[in-house]
Image (cartoon, rainbow, N blue to C red; front, side, top):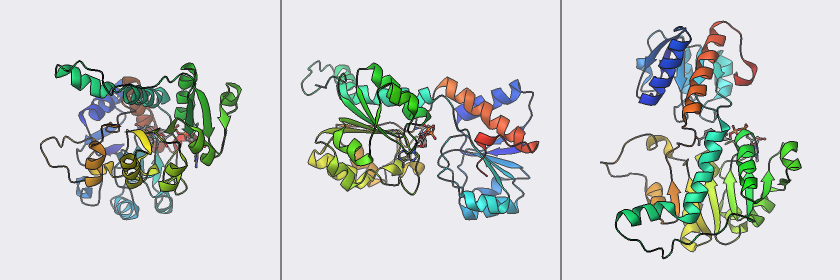
Length: 332
Ligand code: NAI
């Protein structure tokens, strides 16, 4: 297949080209740096498929334009698909495929890394020591052992995360419309979202972004949380109302926050903006808090995950070419 790869970073090109070569070059890949948007559509030149990531725009007008250019497949090289208008794709006969599972360990382990860094203030200690300041004032944390962790969504990633935290000696409360019996056997207790908010010392978000979960971490939800709670979001930015977050950080209701995703991340994350003035005032405010740790959507970014993403993306394209959709990977 002729595939236009949008939003290409050097690592995307490296892994996709390597795996395509390993498989005997089944696909002809063109790499484009810009994200897929209406404006960037002229880059498509008799391609059969586009390959996109989390922040590409795949809404109805873009899908209509892709259809008019003869594109038959949208291959997401990620799990989340909230940026794709699936109804329009289906109506236009465009196949949408994704990578539903790739190293849940990558995201779960990054989540644990954020908790440890935030709790023990490792990010601040690193800077202090490099400046020759060896004081430990205000770097105090708390033992994770015995604390209650709330896990919102216990699918592939949430389940791995819950098991790691059980290993720390934590008590796990979870909320998920589809409870995982294996976790229940390990002692995880499923409760309502309200109870999870009320009882947890740390809350970690691992559910998908849907109309039901949009801004589920709202002013009201934060009000129900204990004072000083730690909130972690490595799932999708818009699960959290960023303005509510700022208000709760200012009042001290939220003790600390770590984000690997942010609701307006599309124009910022994955880019080097170090010599520009940050235009997003909400993000700038979040970055100003000493008890907020932000990473730029890198939780997935391990060698194992990149290899699996490339393998599944290319297998998805081959399956589409041969009209043999892979059930779990096909959205339309
Ligand atoms: P998954 O599909 O295996 O699990 C999602 C779980 O959420 C399911 O058990 C589902 O029943 C549950 N769920 C659905 N609606 C819910 C609700 N209203 N309340 C509570 N739980 C609900 O997905 P997986 O692989 O575990 O990924 C989770 C999320 O992590 C993805 O949706 C994606 O947005 C995010 N992600 C982030 C990455 C990063 O680099 N930061 C990388 C990969 C995924």
